[in-house]
Image 1 (spheres, rainbow, N blue to C red):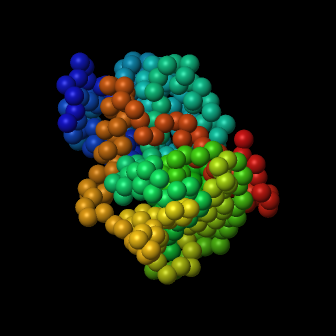
Image 2 (image 1 turned 30 degrees about the horizontal axis):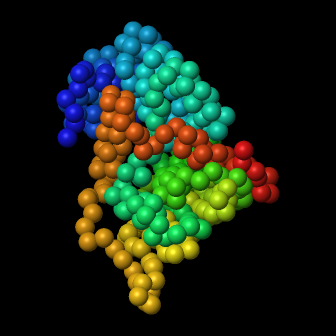
Amino acid sequence: MARQPKKKLRVAFIGAGGIAGTHMRCYAEMADVEMVAMADVSRAAMEKWAQQHGIAGSFTDYHQMLSKVKPDAVSVCTPNGLHASATIAALRAGAHVIVEKPMAMNAREAEAMIRAAKQARRKLVIGFQQRFDPKAQFIRRAVEDGALGQVLFGRVQALRRRGIPNWGVFGRKDLQGGGPLIDIGVHVLEVTHYVMGSPRPVLASGGAWTYIGNRKSDVVCQWPNWDHKTYTVEDLAVGQIRFDNGAVIHIESSFAAHIQENVWNFQLMGEKGGATWDPPVLARDQHGTMVNTSPGWLPKADFGGIFGAKMRNFVEHALYDAPTLAPAEHGLMVQKMLDALYASAEQGREVKIR
């Protein structure tokens, strides 16, 4: 239950698309939050949310919104290409910020965001909801308790057989920074890295290919008729990341791949045991026997549940100075991994991560 606040957290939004609506639905459930304004180039998008949530201020220029409204906190819900500029502007205006994943287009932007937060003495949180999943927390506790021993290897999979988005700008590298790796792969990568204890990445090797999304397709699929003419991102990306403690992560991510079915999962292998995220299982040797252990009960872990937990954690962090599960420094490490995997794919060689 939320504490009784000395004041409500006055929240504004930069970006009024679908993900902003999800933020709003979460905030609407919180007695210690007041949604005060939003900024977007689309007035129609803002009118929808204004009517639904009673948000008074609507601006087509977020700089003007920040100056006039002076919110306590801002949800940055723009395409990836605007994450850094919007976040830095909000921080400099004196607001705490939660920015949706990925943190930025590249690590250089992410570092500038962290500098801005430190200079403004404001809090910066990254929208990594998968680490709030009760299944992930179960495995995280097992790792912390030493049940797996030293974690040696993580296998990350965020694979769609044919799931190219036919909305938004997800196929445009200039606005998103990449395709499935930076859009959906980041979700499973961040939670795997977090559960492993967030070691520092040092080397990466990757490959990326485009062979379906950039051409017209008549194949029956969930989201047909995407804009293949503006599609400049990869269909499939794979790679390997090595960390300073000797551990390795292998990642596979796709919008379109010739696989039997979609996969959304991670697996850990350690010196004393292993773990799988979904279903949550620990694999260990006990009493001279190979034993698989699963929890008897965990809280429900649907999208709304983990997203709501993410948003509540941000409010607790901003309003009550509670710890955050998704600090900007974690976002930067994940961004460096993504950058290095893309760079390796382009250069055809292993890349150092600094």
